Amino acid sequence: QVQLVESGGGLVQAGGSLRLSCVASGSIPSSNTMAWYRQAPGKERELVARLGSVGITNYADSVKGRFTISRDNAKNTAYLQMNSLKLEDTAVYYCNLYSVLSSRIYWGQGTQVTVSS
Image (cartoon, one colour):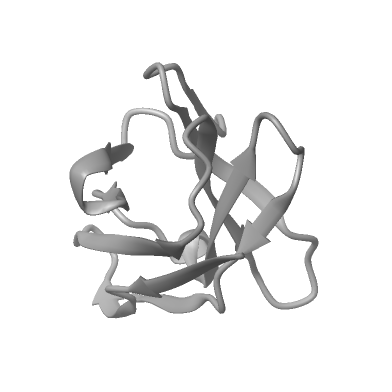
């Protein structure tokens, strides 16, 4: 079993920055992909950014050039650096780990990001 704990969310003014962290613990599969998703009120959960164990990244078009996903494998931690935040970035952000071998998916509990004008 894998546990994911996010932190770093909060209230920030438009144009500001936040960095989210996701710490993984437990039986972490060696080959995995970590990602950040978000869900705004009344909307479906959507992919924000994904980072594979070999370094390949994918970003939602809405965050390209503003958000950066990274990971520190030694600390079993993934990060999401969010710059130039917009009102529409307001959402609960979830960390996700996907095991390449087993296809199991794990989710964190989420962290709220609120961008104000």
